[in-house]
Amino acid sequence: MSEHEMIDTQLIQDENSKIENDLLKDYESLGERLERRSIDIRTITAKVADYAVATPTWGVGTGGTRFARFPNPGEPRNIFEKVDDCSVIYQLGRATPTLSPHFPWDRVDNPAGLMERAASYGLSFDAVNSNTFQDQPGQESYKYGSLTHASASVREQAVAHNIECIELGKALGSKALTVWIGDGTNFPGQQDFTASLERYLDSMRQVYAALPDDWQIFIEHKLYEPAFYSTVIQDWGTNYIAATELGEKAKCLVDLGHHAPTVNIEMIVARLIQFKKLAGFHFNDSKYGDDDLDSGSIDPFQLFLVFNELVAAESRNAPGFDPAYMLDQSHNVTDPIESLINSAATVQGSYARALLVDRDQLVGYQQSNDVLMAHKTLKLAYETDVAPIVAMARMQSGGAIDPVAVYRKAGYREEKARQRPASTVGSSGIV
Ligand SMILES: [Mn+2]
Image 1: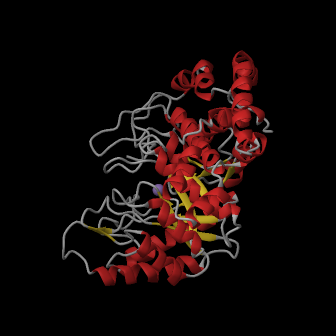
Image 2: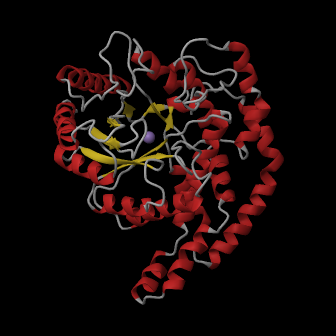
Image 3: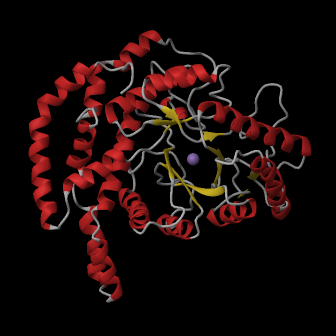
């Protein structure tokens, strides 16, 4: 357990005690129904309790759109305050023991002090993220690209930033660098497709060479935005090619919002697992063009189908299968702490549902081409209400049965609104 907590633990216990009996009844009832399907609810609960997803430090700031940003009161003003907010998400929800920092936003002179602050809450650091999609004061501009820029000096600057991120990450105990670039074009003819990818590979080979032995590099693709005609690392195919060209330590990161509409993401996940190139996930959801809506808020069935592939890989001990799980969301109209608590629970719930799939039965139906029953096998798991399992896992781990209700009752946001006067400079969330 951590040394200190942002939310009064007595409040959590008091609130839990009011609804604990209801939870026990729901849990027992679900346990009986699962027993009829030869599933032990306690085994599932233990797995769900062990499941963890990283919180993005940028996620606790208010996001925005290209039109405007409407800041929440009490926004964190620096990485230490972001860590404080992330600790609330972890304390109440118990699903998020790691943080994924973003540089240069989260750069500190004293990484040991930052680690200490995080550790005091029981938190540690996951993959670090570089940023070459935004200009920093006194630097050459990334307006026309970064790792793929036509100018060698801009590429060198972008490579150096990524190598610096590895150094900063080492000091924080991270083991992976996630690289997403905004590079691409808005006009046909603006750049040569082949030359820009070749420049990307040359730059990334230099970053790759700086990786410690026990580190990995996660490549994140994105179909479009900020570039609107072409993106250099636009899809999982180019991502896979780049990861294969670079070597074993390079893998492909799947951000759920970075695909064309209607793309079968779960199938991409299966392919990457099969060829040992799945780095992990940035969980979020998407309806049209936005890639940072709350996980499972738009298409929870898709999230379940992704987890169905993950659990299938886990149950057959797929070689090299060890994905990193992270949330990557931007919260424009909700309290980011509430959204992240809720999203982490949604992701856990999708994992729980996927654990309920009767895999032997599924294989049998697939072998005999019983299409309807194969589909119904998945649907039975998906349609099971797993909320009592997720709540029980949370309570047994010391969290709140109803974390959002406790968060509101604790008055954390109101307290921070008083302690953190609104900043007039910059923004602390992705826009
Ligand atoms: Mn992402």
